[in-house]
Length: 360
Image 1 (cartoon, one colour):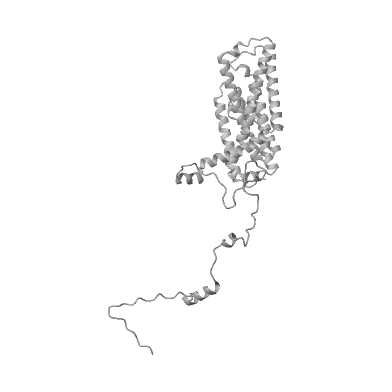
Image 2 (cartoon, rainbow, N blue to C red; image 1 turned 180 degrees about the horizontal axis):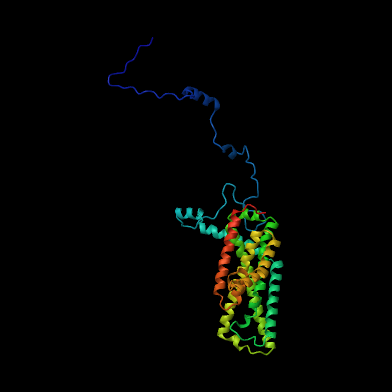
């Protein structure tokens, strides 16, 4: 039995570090290292020529690839260069360039523009645009030639050469109503409302964008009719050797500009009427029947009945207000009435499109 050794006075022995679990003692590690032999550095045997590295796949460095002249294959260990923020930008600027939140106004404008562009593409198709412009231009030319040829003093008045356009504005408005109503009812007919709502879920923005696309067509029709009417009136007056000096005065030019703007406003309002009718009635036949019967028959009967009672309501009816806006010298009440009717129809269309679940 070994004697117990006590530490010397004033000496404190250092405790041994406990052995970690699963670790062999030092003599076991040394013996296993002698058996395994010395370790080699990775890649040293390749330098001695014992083994060869397999050839890399792909074209060699510096050779053109992909048929593009001047482009080389990048090294496989080097990432492709991606253009980053401008040189010298601070970290905050870099983060703001990479992650820039969009405001609500930007999202709203983007949705409206997308709806407007899609509707404008459909409205300006040649099979729709060319017959429409040709037909309205022909009606305007016939009206201008008839007025200059058949009337005794066609060059008098403050409306200038656009005076014949005031007589055919109601016909052009009916044509634009029919075009807008047919465009909206075709969405139900071909079942494209679902696709449009998937692309633009906000229904109010979708409706406003579609109406704006149809308004572009109304603007083109207004410009065409004004130009054709003015040119035809000038040509017919020159053929009859009439004095057109009054048309060159400043008052006549102001009157012509006023007529053109009022005709444009009437055509835009007619487009809104037709769009609302097509959206609410869902059928081209029903929408066209309601528009034509109400404008040509219903308002005439109502105006005659109101006149018998001593009331003047023609300026406050939707169809009659369009005609009075374009042709009446006192057009302010008609303009107010047209604005109110457009607001009512647009609000009703937005409310219906938001609330309805029948989009086919």
